[in-house]
Image: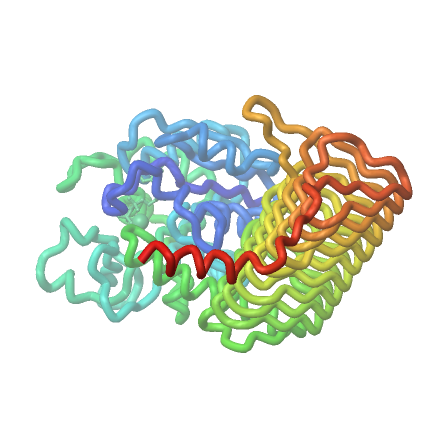
Length: 464
Ligand code: UD1
Ligand code: MG
């Protein structure tokens, strides 16, 4: 029979070993605060409430879970993992069933492993089961001490372990399944008689055994998954493992990576089939890339929508923008936040766009700045065109109709409107609106002085 399952996620600690002003659980793995990964695992295994215990920078931690179906419990002072669970249990007073404890600093854990662990807890009819693993370097972890019959006897923290206990390589992952009644009674009994003077949840093993209850341990072979993050070294290691997982998922989904080792994709990015990604590319946030796009080297794409069959040539930055199907961007282009490009748009070398819209088939191929511009379809923006959108006080709009031709080296002094089908001659400084179909030209008439170069030479030689 499926048991009632609630989950408590411990996320109140500062994480001193991170040497950071940012609470440990807010440090990101593949673009996501690390504690969100166990929250997502909890969402897949829990039938009851999910409680996140917060303390350090609690507001920021709460912001990171906004919109999810979780409850917060405040642990005002970080007196240890048992004290944190006590705060969480205040929210589960009427709950009867299995309480799963996950740690906010164990982000690589998967629902599959937790489900296997829960099945063992059920099969053994245990009151408490702890998830363990064997590691090559157990330093920092609580050691699993077993009795002569092989059953778990207690957990000894690294700081409190003697030399022989320190040699034990089986460690506590910080993940437990408790019968709710046992957990409620045990967390009130645990003392703080240890080197840190903290209330250790690990002491619940001995407390359960003293009550004559069944205490089990389930050892997982995948020690990578249950790695705790306490330092930046471990953070980087987790990032590497997560990156491999993410890239493998995309490759299995039909994405070609020229070099997956040097392609960095955040956890929530979605990528369509037959997309090809070259090395050095960083894709962040809620970016989505449609089928058949090609992304060449050294691009960074953040919170953006990239349409089908788009080509992004090398070394572009695209932020909070959307690029329509079959468009071409780069090399060396910068789409700053708020750009919406329709289909078949071309943005070329050294072009910067900000808060601008471009219609179907419009082009800005070389050395251009377009800011606060609304540009229709079929428009050609010549090399070196600049929207002068800032007058020192406020930002002004440039509106360009359909099928407009803007010649090279034009300054469009905003606010200004260029009507459909108008033609702006090269070198113009446009300060007044241009009517549809008109030519705008603003240049000093050219004068050619015949023989001028020869005359200058002669003048110089006379002076000597
Ligand atoms: C803990 C375990 C250790 C285990 C390891 C696995 C204890 C005493 N030790 O050690 O046996 O091998 O995890 O990774 O349980 N937290 C709170 N409030 C507190 C203290 C901690 O919410 O007062 C949270 C932290 O934010 C963190 C988690 O609990 O997410 C674990 O705390 P941490 O200080 O990292 O414990 P470890 O020393 O890693
Ligand atoms: Mg830890």
